[in-house]
Every structure is written in C-alpha cells, then in structure tokens.
Length: 309
Image 1: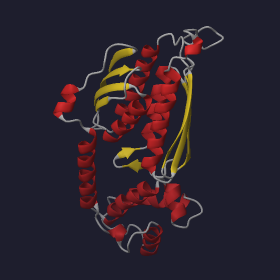
Image 2 (image 1 turned 45 degrees about the vertical axis):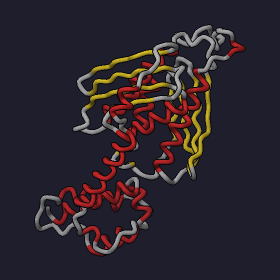
Image 3 (image 1 turned 90 degrees about the horizontal axis):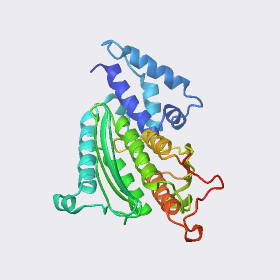
Image 4 (image 1 turned 180 degrees about the horizontal axis):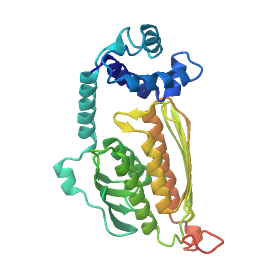
C-alpha cells in the first residue's frame, strides 16, 4: 500500500465517522468543505504513485486533532482493527437477532384475520413476506442484514403485527437491493392485507422517545403514495449498515402500500436511537391506522367512497 493510498483509506474512515465530508470539515475548523474535497481528489489521483507524499504533516495533525485521534493516526494501517470490530459486531448481531432452531421450528403466523403471503423474485433478490395485521407482535427474519431485522422487529412488536420475512439478496455487492426490495414487498403485503380498507381508522400518528432521541411519524392509508422524510443521522453507518438505505426502504414501502407517510426525527445524537425511535413510531402509527373503528361500523373512512382507486 502506498503512502497516499494509506492516507486516502484513513481519510475515508474519518469522513464515515464524521458523517459526511462537510461535517468533517466543520469538526476540523474549516468553514467550507472545498479544501477537503480537493484533498480527496488529489489522494485518489496519487494513490498508485509510490513517490506521492499523501497528506502533509500540518494538515494531518489538524484532521487528527479535529476528530480526536492521536498524533500519527493517519499514517497507521487500521485494517486489522476494523476487521476485529466488524467481526465482533457481526457476532453480536447474530447472537441477538437470529432465532435458535427450537424458536424457528415453533414460529408460525396464524392464518386467520388479515393474513397474506407475498413472494417477489428478481435477479437481485428473492423475498417472501408473511404478514398478519391482527397478530400479537411476533416476528422472524432471515435477510442477511441484522440491523434491518432489528428495525423490522420494532414494527412487528409495536404495531402488533406478525411478520415473517425471508430474503436471499445480492449482499456480495451491498445491502441496497435487499433493503429496498424488502420495503417494496412489505408494502405489497400491507396493501393486500388491508383490502378495501372499509371500517379502519385510516390515520395514525405516534411520538416515540429513546433517551435523547425523539421521532414523530404520521401516516394516512390514503391510496396515494407520498413520503416526507426528515431524518439527518449523526453517523453515516451504524455497525456496518448504511443509514441512507432507510430512506430507500420507506420509499419502497410507501410506493407499494399506497400510503402517505411523514417521518420527522425531532432530535437525537445517537444514530441507533434515531433509527429505533422512527421504526417504533412507525409501528405504533400503523397499528392505530389499521385498527377497525367501531363507530364507522364497516363504512369507508373517505368521502370519496374508496381508498383504493
């Protein structure tokens, strides 16, 4: 590895830790990110040049100090540390989110009530979603994306929805297709399970806190898709999960369930907390919206007379 390549790799790590290039610039005392953008381009151009000096010492010290790293951090190879951290995170995730064989054998979603199973196969993903809107909050997942499974569990638990989702996706590329397509297939399942929507409350909202974080979710099972997504994560990655994919998940879900969805993270410093409050609030808002309203007595909650056309 050349010196420029090592500096570039570690520079990417600083950007990831800061959350973005502009955030890194602010942390290190720059008013604008243009200087760091130029540095990034220069390192990318010089990465294969054995004679390139990489980041000059004065700038390296400024970056290290701004991000709380000890002097000389940019010049060290951190690959072994990253591999160890990733392995530990993966092991912890598997221990938390994967059911035991006995649990898997015992898991079964009741087929009565608003129950559907949807399968969606493409060249990128093969997905099956079983869903019961009148469930008890039980769930089982086998997707290869542990942190997404943790979030889906929040929807099931707080929405009192039974969920069983399996996905075989092209994770050797990245998580993008798997996360987006699970959102699409879950949206299709919701749409089918809701049927005509006669007698349901239609609207739902929830505020959910978790320590310092607070999120609000408001939704309308209107038959018209629309997503307003106001969520600025404090980190770009949670474990190994790219937080940008949450917006792709909700876009897929909204477009195929035909709901209007407003998501606002009102405050939060911990990215895990930010995500969890959003998914818990979504589950609780959805629970309210899909419930039957006794006063409606089976009528359509719309002056149009339909929520499907």
